[in-house]
Image (tube, rainbow, N blue to C red; front, top):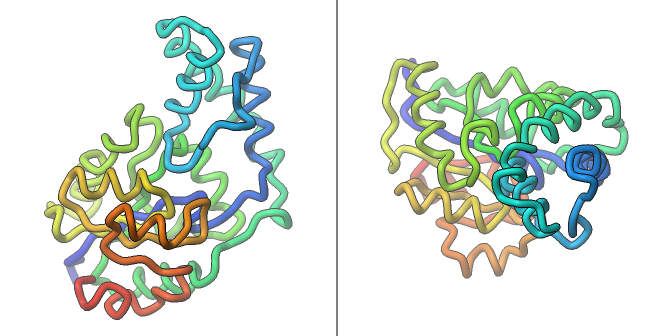
Length: 232
């Protein structure tokens, strides 16, 4: 059966939480590269790509733009080299309903599943591994692909076409995420968005930002068709 719809999932705050374990590693990578992590303690990571976070923090610390961009690969390599060894699965948390939802969608044969995340791909795979979720997501768009999240949907469509031999239209695409930037990137390209209030943004704020559908958690979207009024 050829999939009729494309569903793209964010990771942090949507599928899982790392229990605050990744941020100190990111800070250490920034310090090793630039001598400072900038204002990392007050920075809003939600919805931003890993490269954007590096550049924003570096610029805020007075690093010149060219040097900030040039430092991205070094921060990436330092961070990713330590991530798998530092993450303790017992401090991570799978969000409610995630396992059941992705398993049901994958088994249906009607939906192609992918990722749309600001994580570097290797980091994304490391975070998903403790919950055995990588098998559900053979492709995606990642922080490796674009500096800003708004640039990720076209990458996801290209990768979906490569993996499924089918082109998905924006109206056939659902982005599932927990941040205002998930809503922004979906609507910028004509896709729809199911926003989930398991991250750092309230359900009220997600609704106010124009999410097509909002649920408290993905247990409330176990029947995706019901959660989206039959659209997916």
